[in-house]
Image 1 (cartoon, helix red, strand yellow):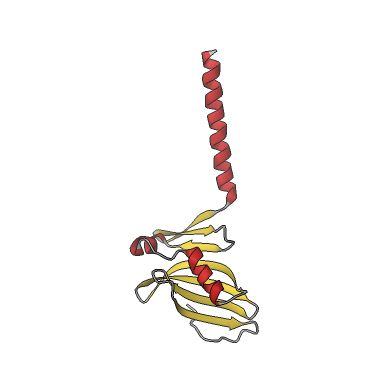
Image 2: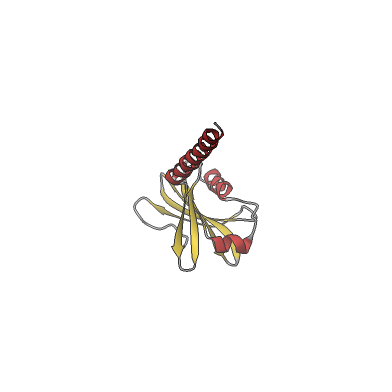
Length: 138
């Protein structure tokens, strides 16, 4: 009787572990992509866009008052109707910025949002026909 309980508990625990592991693996919520000695973390956010954070930049700048979702909101507040596709932690002029890629009816938008102040510190767009309207293409 005692052995049966032990095997039942072990079997249930193993089944739970395998099920949880499979669920996390199949969710595809985050992946790490090797880039030399570092790995960039990419994740699909619940907000519906990709977030990319380089662990070295993350460690370098530490906690930031403005997160990726807030940076996306700043851009959509500034450009009503825009749909954010990707937000990436980057460095511009020695400061942490969120590089936000979005689209609206007029074309593609790239903007930089300061990760500490929330101010838009750079913005460019490309209209549907492909003629640039400023900004730089890194």
